[in-house]
Amino acid sequence: MDPVQQEVLDIFISTKALLHGHFVLRSGLHSGHYFQCAQVCQRMDAVERLAALLVAKLAQVRFDTVLAPAMGGLVIGQEVARVARKRYIFAEKENNVLVLRRGFVFAPGERVLVVEDVVTRGGRVRECLDLVRQGGGTVAGIGMLVDRSGGETHFDVPTVSLLELNFPTYPADALPEAIARIPVQKPGS
View 1: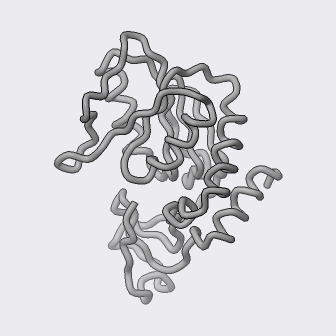
View 2: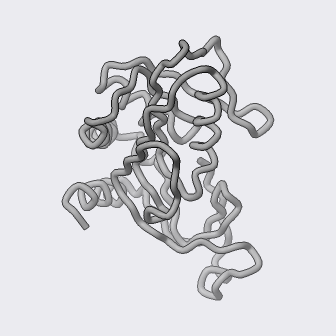
View 3: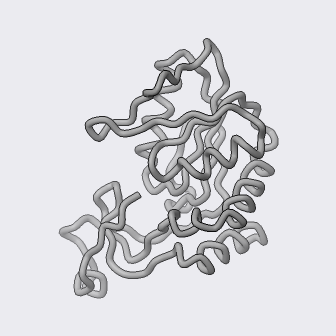
């Protein structure tokens, strides 16, 4: 693990944002590990550091606007935009689908960076990519704090993560005994 990944992992551990147990992820899959980024987001020093690391890693990506999906990406998206001195908007759920509301629109060709906290399969990121393209913008790239697929989830644009880990995930009907005997939690995203 490189020094940046170790620092990010240490931040998640010290803020008690990396949980162990039995969790249902937004994807519907089960896991013995969960990243509860809301725990990190209580600590502005941690948020500032993570955003600075992410912006540095995105140095080659040109963008005008940051788009983050609610809820998970809201805080880190805003902080990335603040550090980069760019416009910030967010997508929110309506009938369990991400939409742009509140008068948010893209200028034709506007270069948009999608920022998310944790990605397992990338469903919310893909929804944001669709919003940008349908709205006439151009996707500049994706920045995320944690890629919990360990690099297995791929997108068609430049993608940067601060931490790549591959914690196993399981369908509900194929849980290992060690996880199945732990009461299930759905902590939210």
